[in-house]
Length: 73
Image (cartoon, rainbow, N blue to C red; front, side, top):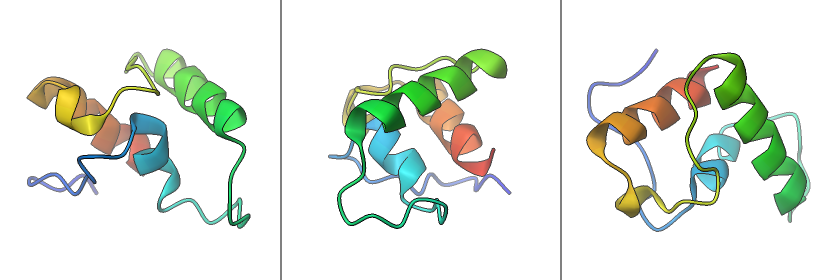
């Protein structure tokens, strides 16, 4: 489900927001480069490309919506 009102942490990056609900990697400090690569690949795979290093507050509404969709995927 993609919420109508975004549930994103504004100061975090795209990759950090996507990782927040991911239960697969339970390390306290995730591998940032690997995480950014995975988010970029996922975005490319589904045609939802967005810079994984961008801060949420820097993104347009449309880009924030893409992040919410990537979180769901």
